[in-house]
Image (cartoon, rainbow, N blue to C red):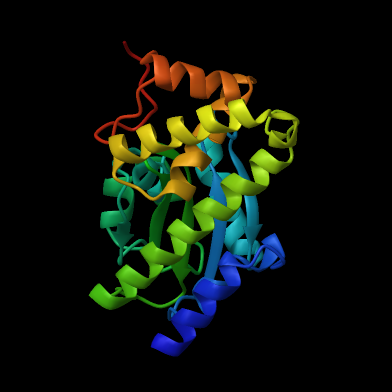
Length: 236
């Protein structure tokens, strides 16, 4: 299992891996039937990035339409969500509309893992099983690690698709400021430098501004990244 997990992590981190293959990494490690990767909320919009099968894609669309379900809870809590008895009484009790909608489907258990980076929450990975299933501690840790790697990949791909992040136009002086701001964010959130820079880029993406202007705001204390809330906080 460890070998399969390591191979899955390498595949997800590889920028040449097709985005359609991301949810299949979970199937290679976990005893689930299907998986999907979706973005949620205003930051990247609500859409399915990729899914292993039609049932996984349908589960995403259902949750988008209803505004409830495991993916929304995972996003809100920034923590894994598990329901091992979706077809039983607990499903409708936990998610009234979503739980009722899946009663006639061949879906016994469902799990959701949030896509997060620092204080930013923007999506979830949904996993389902046709037979009743629970994930043990090791499987949950593996799924969480894969979801974190997928989060970085989805965020990088989204940012790369915009024109706001072309750092080749920055002067050496500007690069120093971005580097300094990256260090500030790193200290604020206790994350590594690569993730801190990705958060600066994400803020620029969300506000349709440049990385340089975001760096200026960080260095001036106008923009503060906090670790204990679900969104980027701006303060002085």
